[in-house]
Every structure is written in C-alpha cells, then in structure tokens.
Image 1: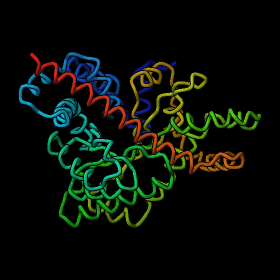
Image 2 (image 1 turned 30 degrees about the horizontal axis):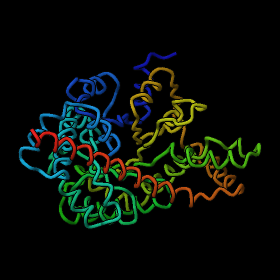
Image 3 (image 1 turned 120 degrees about the vertical axis):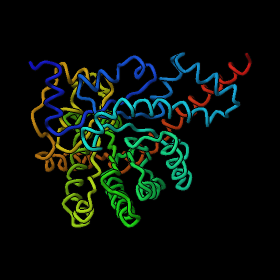
Image 4 (image 1 turned 30 degrees about the vertical axis):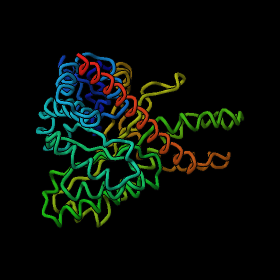
Amino acid sequence: MSQPTSVLKDLSAAGVSIWLDDLSRDRVRSGGLAHLVRDRYVVGVTTNPTIFQKAISGSDVYDDQLRDLAIRQVDVGEALRAITAADVRAACDVLRSAYDATDGLDGRVSIEVDPRIAHDTAATSAEARALWWLVDRPNLFIKIPATVEGLPAISQALAEGISVNVTLIFSLDRYDTVMDAFLDGMERAARAGHDLSRIGSVASFFVSRVDTEIDPRLDKLGTPEAQQLRGLAAIANARLAYERYERVVASPRWAALAARGARPQRPLWASTGVKDPQYDDTRYVIELVASGTVNTMPEPTMDAVADHGEVRGDTVRGGYTAARQHLDRLAALGIDYEEVVELLEVEGVEKFAASWNELIESVATELERFRAR
C-alpha cells in the first residue's frame, strides 16, 4: 500500500486540487492548517455556516474579539461578519504561498454570503461586495448559492472582478445556468477592463447528499434492481456534470475568454464525506478523479484517502454512458431526478440558514455576556 502522503500526492498529480472543508481559529493559530498545506497537499479551504457555527460555539478562542465587539456595541450581524472575516483572512494568509505558487489558480479560501438572503439578488450582490472589501485578500472566494436569484448576483460579482465559489449545485440543468452566469460575468468583466487572469471561480457540485436522498427511496421500493442501484446516483450525477463542463470549455464562447487570459470555472466536488457506513469512505474522492477539478474534503475523509485510498487515474471521463444509463434506470423505477435535486437545493439553503441563525443566537448570547460585565 502507498504511504499516506503519496496517495495525496498521486491525487494532486492527477490534476485534482485538494481543499479542506473546514476552518476554525484554533486550526489557524495552532499551525494545523499550515501543516496540511505543507505536508498534505492542501491548496484551498472552504467554509459554510455550519462549519462556523461549530467552530465559534465550541471554543473560547474568540472571547477577546467578542469582548471588544461588545464594548463597541456592535450589532450581532456585523459582529458575526467581523469574526468570520477574521478567520478567513488569516486562512488566506496561510494559503498565500499556494496562491502565489499556482499563479492564483489555488490557494483560495471561501466565505459565504448570509444564506438567509439566497433568494434576494440585490442583497446577495451587496453582501458579496461587502465581504470582498472586508476580507481584503486576492485569494478570497465569495460563496454564492446557485439559486435562481443567485445567478444574476454571480454574474454581477464576476463582472466587478470579485472571485466566486458558486455553491449548492445539485442539478445538471442548474449547473448549465451556473456556467452561463460565469461566462456572462467574465464577458462583462472583460468589457469593464478587468484582468481576467486574476478573477477565479469554481462551481461546487454537491455529491453525497444525492445518494442520501435517493438511497432511502430505493430501499422503500425493496426490489433487487432497486438495491443494485444504491449508492451510484451521486457519482453518476457528478460525472455527467463534468461532461457538461467539458462541452463549455470546448465552446467558441469560452475560447474567446481564454484568449484574454481567463481561466475555466473549475468543477468542485463538495459534500464528499460518506454518510452511509456501508460504503467505502473514500468513494466520493477516488471515483471522481479528473484533471482540472477540486475536491474539498472534511479532514476525516482526507485522512481516509491518505490511509487507504487508491488513485487509479481518471475515473470520470470514461463513465458518461454508464452514468446516463444509471439515471435512466432510476427514472424507470419512478425516482424523479428533477424532484430530488430541487428538494436538495431547498433543503441545502434551509440547513445553512438554520446554522446561521444558531450562530447568530450563540454570538448574541456571548455579546450580552461580555456587555453585562
């Protein structure tokens, strides 16, 4: 078996950028993040409201900043922005070496707009602008959900030179509109005179949640054929997303942008932690290896890949036909793909909004505690 670091090295050599799906002030201050960058080929970080909720609620390392914010009578919304921006800014500084080494391709850290405004285009655009200014690092990504209302905000941010991580993508058709929003934003950025080589973007296609939703439906059917289809939908969906990505980067529209120095909006595989213990805990990494992709992993998944993963080269491009056949078989059994992915988007926004509300309540409680002193 390969040595742990060699598996991650092989994954990186196969064209997959390894990002960490986690962040906390403890991780930055302890040197843990720097260790992953130095020794585990990590070249990026993603965050979301749930990650921040766990980080801030479970640590006293934020007390000094909370005390200052309380003394200044800062309201809870601005306090939360200040706290999360500080963590992301510090992570950007840790990842700056990777950013410089890859000429801006990697070394990126993502911060998400308030998920409660995911269906408000104007508010999302304003929040993206504010976060870009607040963090003030060139290797930042602003995460914007791929809701219908989020699409114009994605284009607007890119048009202003703001790098974007489009998040919560489940549907293949929605992914098409995300890529169109990217192209539109970059074309507008070019007309505005921005240096396209400095504007980055990834499209975060969520993986494991598809199986988490479809597998119980197959279990309910209870037939042998249904059991044979368990655990395959998520990977099939992601592979077909990559096929659509290949079509876009082969298009004349993209070629015109590339000629002006633009880089593709890379597919990013998110939600890659395995939820079902019956499945191999590396599957959403090892089965989605393709050049020019990003895989953002929680640390337990990264550890599993390093320990017993086996990189077998490209595991995406040869699987398009089988992937389409799989979705066809699901449809024949009455599994409505469109209904599933629409539900997952709604639930995704709701879950992040719930985490954000919990985080606001936690920070409000802490601010009151310091104000009472």
